[in-house]
Amino acid sequence: GAVVSQHPSRVICKSGTSVKIECRSLDFQATTMFWYRQFPKQSLMLMATSNEGSKATYEQGVEKDKFLINHASLTLSTLTVTSAHPEDSSFYICSAILDTNQPQHFGDGTRLSIL
Amino acid sequence: DQQVKQNSPSLSVQEGRISILNCDYTNSMFDYFLWYKKYPAEGPTFLISISSIKDKNEDGRFTVFLNKSAKHLSLHIVPSQPGDSAVYFCAASMGATNKLIFGTGTLLAVQP
Image (cartoon, rainbow over the protein chains, first blue to last red):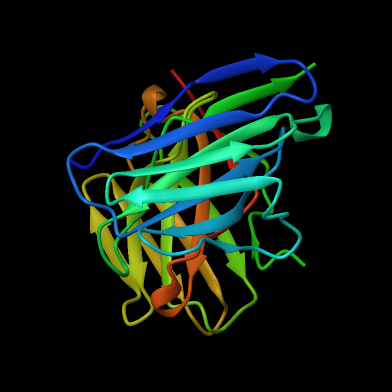
């Protein structure tokens, strides 16, 4: 079945560091990938929609200059948290779909901790 | 404004019995609904989905019911197994955007 791989699974770094998270679809070409964030005991909140070959679409309240998304190929999307601060500490999860109205398949997430 | 709500933060069920997880939504434009299962520190795993043109979809032990007039859906798991213990999220999307709006999740504990 479809598999989405996310790397790294955990990052601990100092405030001011930029962190890159990769999301790969392993056995299918994903036309669209999504990036979510989950705070403790809360729901998954969509941050942005990433389409291969075009600019990402950000949800209201998400800073595009803070969370840089690059979808350079049909199997890879990256999220870069620039100049991360402690309030950016969260669980970041990506997902990918093959086609419209197909279920999204999620990666295992990245736990980001900013000291 | 929470468009997708799961009012029960937790549910405890005996092994072998039925688990019923509920979800309500407010946006009548939603036309595709999904249930995901999530373990701590892992991404959600897709379980089952239903289109708004249907009122029931079944896959093995999992059945999802959709009541559009009440804007309510439920997930039935029968028989429940200890391995089903996890957080269950319902999610909804509208049209071709595929953007998922998630509920807040229900922690299911299946007691042996």
